[in-house]
Amino acid sequence: MRLQVDGPEIWLKLENLQPIGSFKIRGAVNAIRQAPRQATSRGVVTASAGNMAQGVAWAARELGVPATIVVPEHAPQTKLDAIERLGGRIVKVPYERWWQAIVESRYDGVDGLFVHPVQDEPVMAGNGTIGLELAEQLPSADTVVVPWGGGGLFTGIASALAVRQPRTKVYAVEPATGAAVAAALAAGEPQAAEYTASFVDGAGSRTLLPAVWERARDLLAGSFTVTLDETAAAVRLLAERARVVAEGAGALSVAAALSGRVPGERIVVVVSGGNIDSHRLTAILAGRTPT
Image (cartoon, rainbow, N blue to C red; front, side, top):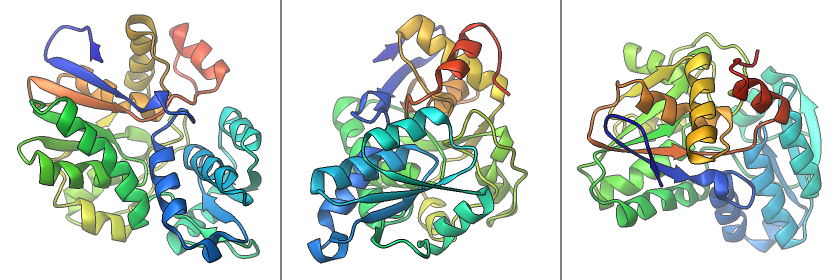
C-alpha cells in the first residue's frame, strides 16, 4: 500500500494486518512447528512485551499445548488481554528480570520449550519471509526501513534481501528513548544506551543482544532515531490518511521516512504491528504524545 504524501514514494508493508496484529506470528509459528514434538510436549515459554507473546500463544493453542509468557511490568494492557484471550498464562516481572530471561534464553521455574523472541534461527527465518515477499512485490525498492526491537525482524528481512535483492539498502529505526543501535554504530560495538519506557513498547532497548548484533551489523546500511513526538505524529497520519492503526513501534519506520532523512526515491516502511491501547491512540488522535 502506498502512503499518499509529498516527496519520495513511501510504501507500507502492513504487518499490523496479521491475525495477531503483528509480524511476530511468522517467527513464532515457524519456530514451534519446526521444534520436535517431544520438546513442546510440556508447553512453550517466551519473554515478550506482548506481540511475540501473542504469536507464541497462537502457535501453542494450534498445537494444543500450554503457553507461559514472561512480560515486563510496563507491558500495555491491550497486549496482556490479547495474550489471555489466546490462552496464554502471564508472569509479570520487573524489566531487569524480563531482560535477563531474554539474555539467558530461559526462565527458571516454568516448564516448556523456551522460544526466544528475537535470536532463535527459526524465528529470524520466519521474519525473513517478509523480505522474500518484498523482493517479489516491490523489486524496484531503493530502501527498506525496519523497526528495531531486539533485531530479529531486521536481521530476517535484511538477510533475505541480501540474497534476493542486494541493491536494496536496509536501515534500522528505533526510538530516541532507547537507541542502542545508534550507540553501537557510533562505538563500533554494543554499548549501553539510555533507556526510558514509553508508548513505543515494542522497540528500543538499553543494549543489543551480542548474537543478533553479529548477524545484523554487516547488513545494516545505517540507523535512524526518531522522537516520541515524531512517532506519535506518524501514528496519527497513518490513521487519518491511510486508515491504518499502528502501535508505536509499528509507526517508527513511517516517522523516519517522513523526516526526510531516509535516502531513496522508493522507500518501503515496515509497519510491524498495530496493537495499541485505546487510551493511547485516543490521546495521539487528539494531538498529544502519550507519556
